[in-house]
Length: 280
Image (cartoon, rainbow, N blue to C red):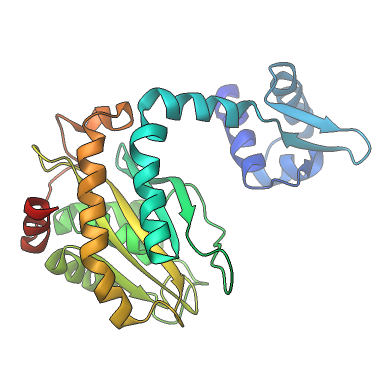
């Protein structure tokens, strides 16, 4: 692993641990020698990405990355074009809305908006990369690919993981059942899959002219509110929202790399999605 890769691994580790970590914890988590880890942390500190709280002896990220992210979001048009759409569906549903974007062949969470202001709130702790085998966003994305490509991307994330809801798939065959259902509907629905007591609905985001899949939009919340009947009522809203973001994406640099190519082997656009695109 190069010094650059090690430095990036430190940044990603600290991003997942907002309260900070000691030098020994960072070195142990990444399997690096303490001396080399200390040098990398000093380099990151000198460049303004990391600070050390001397009283507790821990390292945390500075706001530099957040500032760069905001500059990037403004530059790509995400703030002006996409986030208002995300805020709108969160307000209309009163639940947590999540936007994920295809980066290479990975699906990455990039923004979220909360509609609920009181009562039971849903605030999951999630990695930046979407776990495809047990999430509504993952199923919505995979539904746009052929089965061979979908299985390849699932396998690339490693063996199916434990610790999810009671309805989480235990085999590739069960994962593909969710994917096929999402492909047939044009959106995915899950109950007690990603997390016990939660439900979610997600739709793929496609560019209007090419049909290339560039991301997903989801709404999630407690199952006591997000019943199957309510999710079915939400379906037209989330499909039309995906269509709105798809149109906005043609003016946003965030989706630039997807305008002329598509992730290996897209499946035909489901009938329900084609219909929604025409009326959205």
